[in-house]
Length: 160
Length: 173
Image 1 (tube, rainbow over the protein chains, first blue to last red):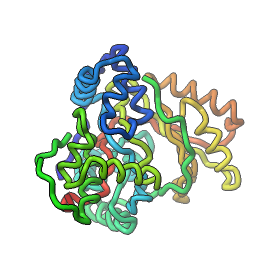
Image 2 (cartoon, rainbow over the protein chains, first blue to last red):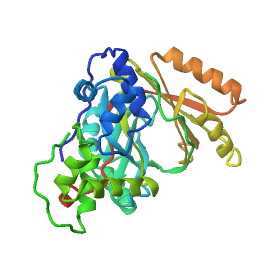
Image 3 (cartoon, rainbow over the protein chains, first blue to last red):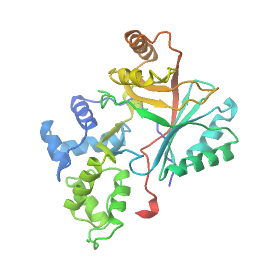
């Protein structure tokens, strides 16, 4: 599996139709044979235009993903948030080591002594502890594992 | 996005739902009949694919079919993880209150890591600029009486990696 680097595209301007598409689809896609036609209809667009715009938004990096949002634990997988306190001079080197793990889904640099924050998504819950052990071995740093204990449901999306 | 390569129907087999799940993790094809494209790629009928996805949704494996917006590309560049140290007996109630705030996009109770990390409630606030995020946070803290609650704001300086979770091994495809 390749390591996906996050590009930093220039700010993309959305027009009114793009905004309507993004806001509508953050709420979900209907489970029907022709879902794009159904959504296009709601938005008063043609199906071809909706598909064209979605492709363009994905290419521009405005949308990182289009598909199912999984509930990792119910899939039998593991999911956690973890952090490292990385010495400033080592930050780039350690980020390459951590991102090389396919189980690392997100990795953000944040302003704190714990400055590297990443999400681990694994096929089994047991694999979380193994990956943490492997990350500690390759980086020589202690991983602070902060698994979720309770989720509070938020409004589905951020309007754009 | 991966396009299906096979157009021949393969006899039904037990691994087909696994293949479907793995293909779905890569995203839904952008074609007029996306479920049919997936069906052809994993050896099911379109109806079977829809039935599996409906079942996974009912069972809660799939929370929803939708999209992930990369806020940064839209100029929503300030992304703050706000963490709070709340008494265990209050954390759930405050979590529910914060989750109901429109500015809060994620809200979780997480395990403390004492002594280094005393915080047990995590929420995300996004905005175009830091000042806006901090102003929103001030209002939220005021509304819920959290001004004196120990908290920290960890702004994001850079996203190094961002993708959906992969829960199915590639070799199962």
